[in-house]
Image (tube, rainbow, N blue to C red):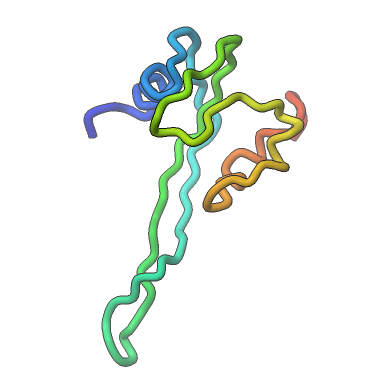
Length: 106
């Protein structure tokens, strides 16, 4: 790997979202195994191939809006109160829902 997770979070903030000020803060590291549609082997040894994801969850507080890039269909800040109602691909909500509780509460 050419960069640490912290460097990657800063690059995404800067290069993808166009936000030059702020410091991403690591909230959690999550490991998930998800089944894919791919099968391997044959006969009794036939099995589904899994995908393993190692997720570094960062938070960024900023008063600047992200810059919309061509690669993004939608890139915006939303109030935390609305986050649970948004359709999020691959159900990635499971990665950040634990952090939606008010600060200081478990």
